[in-house]
Image (cartoon, rainbow, N blue to C red):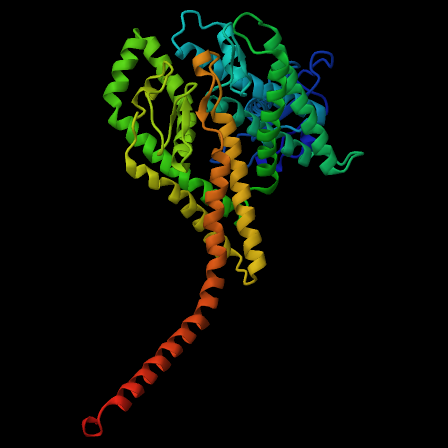
Length: 485
């Protein structure tokens, strides 16, 4: 057997058909199932071609069955990692499996956040009971206690459920969009998978609520009902975001947002100013309520969770109706009194007697309606008076719906008889609709009033000019002849 003289002359015919060992002996077929023969020829280039030119060695790379492949390991780890964070580019799952995975992931992340908050709360025993209460009440489910039902729940806690559910909605939408066409149309298939996901999530909430019925506790049916509402709303948000991406906000939605944002922005400024001015008093009261460092952290977290509620209460103050702190105590620009304040340090700085200048705050609510109508008119101009009035009323009613949702979520009861009514006063939504409607109607009628006022002004100017000329002629006629001129 002769070897090629150079490495370039080595062909496949020079490689034996059967696997060989490093000694050139054929390898048994029952020991090696797959072999890759790698031949390297090292020729002495200095000596040139000759009969002694031959490969210096033959190496065999044998893949033993069961040996781990690093590339496959990296691929599996990457796939598992994307699935653990519910990445939209993760491996495709069947519809039911995707719904179950998304719901279980959202519930697990929410419970994990609840456990962290339970540890930060400074409770003596931050066990599963406290964590389950935090997670269930973050859906705004009422809390049953010995003294009554607590419905005044912190809106800040809803972040630990809304954000994971939004992520789950995006994951489900991506899974359905990547799947193959089935017996159902894509839209119906998406609705079916989302329905399964919401049902699984509500079932998890029901199991968590039923697993601990000690006092205090969240009843099973309200826990499942609120879980369905929150999962449906947040999941829909995620589905729309995944399917449509970042789409421009419609002009009508922008107008409503501006009409609501003006009073809310002013309420945020008032709340921040009040808290900064009373920071020393808050620290003193908090030092009396919480003794240890863990309790200080816990009460601080609780106050941050209730801060959105307080801002909405301040918005009701801006609207003019005010908010209630107790059975017979209301604070508004037109009423004052000593409130019955719960054991929350940030509420101790609420002014008992607000300044008289706050009576002008409701005007800014109408100004918000004007700005919203202006924004709408610039995006979609409309010359017909009837259409402008219809738009003005629609903006006011939509803003009222937003105010109703905010007021309903921010208020409630703490179960005690003295604290049965906390939050925005009744009638706040109606007053907000009237003030916003006044602003939008003003902008709707202003072009018409201006166009109608122009001929009236011209006619009035002509009449005044004619009357002045007539009066001058009469005066000249009454003068003596010699004095005329």
